[in-house]
Amino acid sequence: MENYSQITKTIELEQYGIKNADVRYQLSPEELHKIAIEKGQAVEASSGALAVNTGEFTGRSPKDRFIVKDDVTRDRVWWGDINIPFDTDKFDALYKKVTDYLSNKEVFVRDSFACADEDYRLNIRVINEYPWSNQFAYNMFLRPTKEELVGFDPEWTVVNAPGFMANPEEDGTRQHNFAILNFTRKIALIGGTGYTGEIKKGIFSALNFLLPVYKNTLPMHCSANVGEEGDTAIFFGLSGTGKTTLSTDPNRSLIGDDEHGWTAENSVFNFEGGCYAKVINLSRDNEPEIYDAIKKGAILENVILDADKNVKFEDTSITQNTRVSYPIHHIENIQVPSTGKNVKNIFFLTADAFGVLPPISKLTPAQAAYHFISGYTAKVAGTEAGVVEPVPSFSACFGAPFMPLHPAKYAEMLSAKMIESGVNVWLVNTGWTGGPYGVGTRMKLKYTRAMINAVLNGDLGLYNYDDYHIHSVFGVAQPRSCPGVPTSVLSPRATWNDDEKYYTTAFKLSNAFRENFKKFEMHCSEEIRRGGPQRYAF
Ligand code: ATP
Ligand code: MN
Image: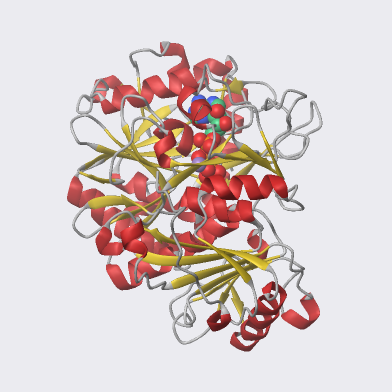
């Protein structure tokens, strides 16, 4: 797309404390691709995509994510295990160490934007030790035109030094890696980890503070797309629940797969300029758009290639979290610019490994608030065959690790917007059916897509209560039929063929909901509290 090859502008890094660096400014993805291979840091897969290993870290490290506690943040941030405070002086000292480390090195610098709506734009300068991390920034942030680069004034800076190792005793970190946000200096400082997701989620976390505090805009960990009639759909969900997979839909234009804002004017905009898809077990049959996006320009992370440089998508020997980043225009049906109006439907995606939540159900406004604050999905503990227990995992607003403010703040904003726009909210279980993990199977993608299409096409009756069954434990409205889905699949209890086991497991989950919600109860109205499960085990 953007051809930066004629850019002659150079950038001085002395102002950042990086001295005598060999600055490679705004290189094209082709150049970065080539340099990464020449340096032996990457190989080219048969598809043309670059394949890299991110090193020791193949996922984010939430325990090593800090926020500098200062005048901007002190009274606003919800401090705790998620938003861990970091001392200003310690930050300044560590920043100096990192910039000393980058001095006298070849350094890759990229200017870019976040926020596709011009009124909310944030200018970002990313400074990377590695060329492929810089190409990731090209893929994931919005790409300024050559004209926009003239006089570009960066507001936030990402300093990314995967090869720098902190000394916890001296530097105030937990271990050798860290991702620290400083809202006064407007810096995201990342070291000791090459996992690229830290770069995008650093800016995401910054926006999740800035937008509600200064712009009256709700930031959301969600994907979004638009139908032919101009109706926008939003998909919230924790990692692996299907945000990227389900928003990539040939019949709807993609706005974005992970990070969005909902403005006071009721429009939605993507923060990013690219997608970051999981590729575990990816197949062209199931997910052709994502499969075909893996071509020159895309960056595969931590995958295994065969002798012909084909990706072995089933091979998880490095990690389960194999990924690909690509600029959004690698997907055919996209919305340009990445904005939408008229939010009609919100989906809460959950991968329920207990297999007890209905594959789709409709929520009342109170239930929607309750489930948003709860942010439920499940993890599967252990990898040994046979004895595995799902573990419930609750993350407020479906993205607590990225939310610097108290969850109630985001929940209040969402509730107000839902009422204002009269949206319908649906809970979609993309997880297990026919029993829990180990017994049942993952919900067929084909069925989940059919259920979502039925909602979006208006094929699920909205007003006739007879079309729904109220779930006796969770209280949600479960449709009795849905085009393209066998009726038996719609009732989780029916798929188990064992009512006693089903209810025992459902109560296990409803109890977990209740336990988790205790810490939010005092912030919620009686109505929202009643949006939770209706029955518990004693
Ligand atoms: P992240 O926040 O980490 O980016 P995500 O919510 O975008 O996570 P996806 O990348 O969409 O998650 O991952 C969903 C995974 O689950 C994909 O690998 C997809 O193929 C698989 N999957 C299997 N069955 C389903 C289903 N019924 N619905 C959605 N995804 C499914
Ligand atoms: Mn995703």
